Length: 518
Image 1 (cartoon, one colour):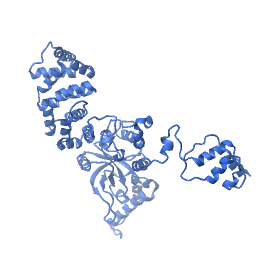
Image 2 (cartoon, rainbow, N blue to C red):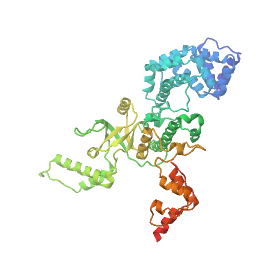
Image 3 (cartoon, helix red, strand yellow):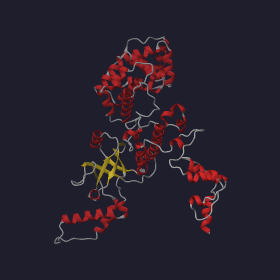
């Protein structure tokens, strides 16, 4: 758009807002007004002008109702909605609400979505606007909840191939699952297909949608635990936030490594990257079934097998040998298998349960999973890899994406999942936290409980006579007498469930060191 045309559109926009020019009934006049709206540099200022002008909201509504063709919905109408969504706030929501009520435009926009007439951008905007309508305060959101609950709408959003549309669908699904119509963007749940208010439902291994999501995770500051208003839920809050903080450490490492693989960061990737093709489904031998996985055939041999090829060049076989061609192939396969199982470098290749990622067409992350290491399959020519899908995955969509991919590569991930997964799964199973009242949520002035097992024959003697020789109490080999501070520390340790002893090493350590030198 040229500077001159921009100035003309800006003038037409402000002339209509001021009332010096009427909008009229012509479609071209409505288009020019909407184009002038989108030409404004500052969305917040533009929305303020629309709301403050007596003619502004009516003009936008009339212009959006003037043309309901599919070309308009995918084009200028989407431009307007995209522009208004940038003005995040009550004013922008007010303008959007005037566009959808009465539902002249909105009804046609919904019908076009159901009929798959909207392009990818318009579908994303439809989902985003619907989520905004579901969260509008002081509005009747029941019609929009009913619309969003329609399986035709919701299933299409959740099954979309575009991650931003799926994210919007996840948010809508989460809002529908809440009893309140209000939804806070800071609260957990709804960010993507692996974000839930209940952290125990979160899959430890992330989904592809989670990896590409730009939404910030739901993390709370440590001060949240000291909030008196949340005293009743602080145990649950502590488990929830601890899980999310630890998992975010894992996610940070994982995202950083994938950015290197996708050439978003200029660093060397240490893991194996191999081009593969989908060859079928693997469930293990007949007598030893394993969880199913995708069977992937490598396009090229592993570099580690080059040493065997050099060795084979020095070997020769005659036609009258007792070994048939099939036997020679079997011997070669066994040699490759031995290299993978007994050679130090070969045994490190694609270790069992190694985290891996499938990437289509050099850019699209399809799914994460783990390697099921079968040396017999890896020793094949070309090698075959068993990739087991992990976590929360739409298997049907994943399979279709693998079949539709023009190129496919498997990337070995070096992020130490084994260091995070056991702890994260343990946190999801925990229902009780030992010593939480005494350590985590202790309050000043609160009495510390005594231990489950008491030793009155020791504590009573020390209380009555702090200068007593504790040789007779602890049956030590030599005489031991404590000073006042040491006696108090020992009594605190014996009488309280938890005690803190501060200071340099005391008589016990000194006695132990002296005893070693005697």
